[in-house]
Length: 323
Image (cartoon, rainbow, N blue to C red):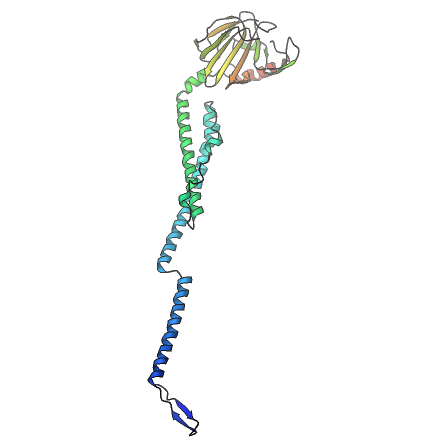
């Protein structure tokens, strides 16, 4: 029930009932409507500015789910990368070592991707960096897996040829040295017997009687069989494949020919003193991938552990080579 309003009449000095005109009613209603409209507009503006709409809420939830999936994917790829790194390490340091193969360079395994615009399509999003990081990591893992797969194909191929590899590696001494009766001069710095200067001796010398048989130390093909190399006199070079070569110098007579296939233990010549030599002996070298290495590490088919130790001692005692 509305309250009755009164007005004070200054002329009659009495209170009289206030009469509300239609005009005042209309103005009052319009005032209420205007106030409500302004309030509503302000409320809607603030809501749109600071509060997400139902569609935006749905999109935000979907974005959060996508972001979570990206993070989970990154974690899984990190685990895959750890396993892949272990496979690469085994491949380089175990599998390829067994078959005398060089490891795959890290520059190839970890090579980047060319082009600054490779991930241009991922630019302009709120989670661009996350998407680029994930995509790049996936690309890198994919490439490394491809390289590793090719490497394993190569290892399988080498495993199938393992019998040939074992037969080809120079694994015996170049002459019959039972009970180590032939004194060796080892690999390393020695006094030259003629010039009396310190020079690096890239092989091993075995003294023996003139005409003592010299044998191929592994399967291969004779590359050189002549006296054209300065200092070596009559000499033979055998290519064993797999990066191995052997050289036999100062022969009195060559018993093979260039291009001939030989097996481990085949006769290839006889001990002599041709070339730059001070007496009958065979100068023997093992060459791996073009580098001359210590032959003493390749007598495992001939020597027991005790004989190997004795060979080390004997070869290191000599301070002078024989050529």
